[in-house]
Image 1 (cartoon, one colour):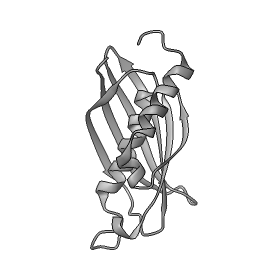
Image 2: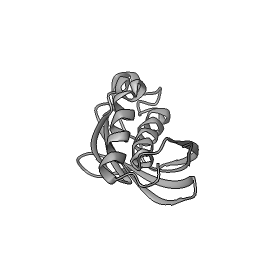
Image 3: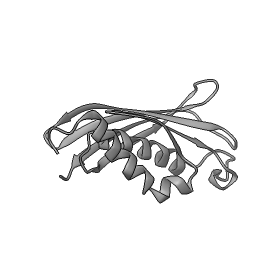
Length: 138
């Protein structure tokens, strides 16, 4: 949708989020949604903790991925992940509130790169760094 305004793009991403049953089931909350920027929160529940008493990396990845989806869809064009990498830098534990902040770094043609940093609310400890590669389908 070339020419989509910032407000229309954000509304597009809000509709996508409203239909996102997976993120909702994990208790994620979108707290900021702007063009090329999103912030999503999630509390680590007992069913997210692994055998080492830390949050399973798959849940941290899911949080970062959901934030990535919001940020890269905020231009108002149907955009999906083409790939992603994550580096886990510190553990999170039961009851921790994780905050993912994502920003589109570049978009070129139908491709883009979005970085997401996941921190622990309260002390700002960086839990993970995520880089997503996106592809616009429309």
